[in-house]
Amino acid sequence: MRLYCFLFFCFAVISTAASCQHINSYSYPVIKDINSENGAVVSAHPLASNAGLQMLKKGGNAIDAAIATQLALAVVYPGAGNIGGGGFMIIHTKDGKNIAIDSRETAPAAASRDMYLDKAGNPMMTLSQNGHLSAGVPGAVAGIFAALKYAKLPLKTLIEPAIKLAEKGFAITALQAGSFNENKENFEQYNFSPVAFTKTTAWKAGDTLVQPELAATLRRIKDNGQAGFYEGETARLLLAEMNKGRGIISAADLKNYQAKERAVTDFNYKGYRIITMPLPSSGGIILQQMLGMISGKNIGAMGFQSPAATQLMIEAERRAYADRAFFLGDPDFVQVPVKQITDSSYLNERMKNYEPGKAGKSNIIKEGTVYESTETTHLCTADKEGNAVSLTTTLNGSYGSKTVVTGAGFLLNNEMDDFSVKPGVPNMYGAVGNEKNAIAPGKRMLSSMTPTIILKNDQPFMIVGTPGGTTITTSVFQSIVNVIDFNLSAHNAVNLPKFHHQWLPDIVFLEKGFKPETRTALENMGYQIKESAQIGRTEMILIKKGKNPSRTFTTVADHRGDDGAAGY
Image (tube, rainbow, N blue to C red; front, side, top):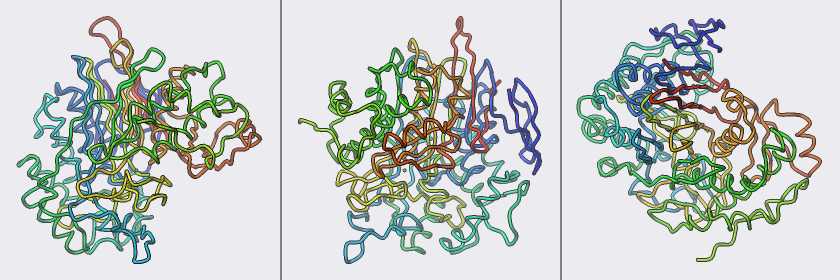
């Protein structure tokens, strides 16, 4: 058991088996691994995880914990935690219900297919990636209220930790200080007023971040519910910000936004039931494709990170991402052949041209034949009653559009870049798409977010997810295979180096520290390799069911960031 204790700018390593009971927002522990019996939370920041833990201790369930954690992330993890973005939530309830809540942003009514093209038809990617025009209509707050009916505690209780953290402030970590300093010019360029994330001197670990305008916005949500964000003073401030920077979100866009409850993507893999997100997230579909493509192989016998296993998974990734580019879009706007491209016979056909020991080529291997978004954040929660939540939420790029709503204190997303600005032109994550993901008013842009819950004997076994743009689904894919096929511990499944291939560019990205002998073998097969400093920040809870109602939770926060695990 490892606990990294953060005390202003000092870190100490301590061994413990339980979460701290009282956390001071100016001096707090960063727990990476924890075992517990009553419940668990893991997220991108220890103060947010603690907010969720406190809800479990107050008698709340996993949904309460998820909502409190999500709201706290909007304060303590502004690079991706948000109320100005959107996300996807998977819920498994103690009575066996599986629910998908879609709070993905939508294109404003004034949006148009070619809005980011110049007169010559060339894409102006700066406009789709930064500033006011890059923002879609935020869905995060509506998603929270859509989930609230499955919670036990009132919103006034769930939002209070976030309000206190915004109002009274908290000590930032070294990673956050570096991030604020690196983005100072962006914040100054894309805002008309000073923002909370800039100051005259450089940020350093232990400095206090106070966000009074965000606290006031959260209080309006506390007092007025969903209308406290989409109408009234907060909406007025957001619309005023749009006018300053020629943004196109309107009052009607805000008032008409609705989160949607959708049928989950639900499939089996080697005796486990995988519950994940449907469209407009591409994640669930291509996760089902990738697992389906390898399911007939004894990949476990090949060995973790062996050349054979790694190559097999790379080729499954290549084919799934080719299909993503060609077939997928918002199902409310376009027809997507989901059943056909996830059918086992189709997946077997896709792998017929796979050659062990020889690299595939993306200029040859394209989409199959059918007859008929890097800055995101993830959290997992679980309780002793059997409820579980996997939630991925995002602003898209780091700090989204880089634009803060003056007077309201929250960052706007830059999700419009997740549309296909022009067919065949890659977005900020290198993903390409076609007309099915073209911009249209009210349409949801395609996503890679893959919040996932795995059931064993219809009981929660694993809760997993990660940020990382297009690397999200491949990281979830590998995390699942690491546990189920390679029998890795949760700690190793999360923290050992990962790899990524997304069809285009035709490059295999290997995380720093990946087995050198496997890298050499892949190069000899003909793969182009590029080293990546970091792939994702996976959060995982593994649950062992004992005699009713006994459960034990093994919770792991990724070592790649300030992520924190909590449990009791």
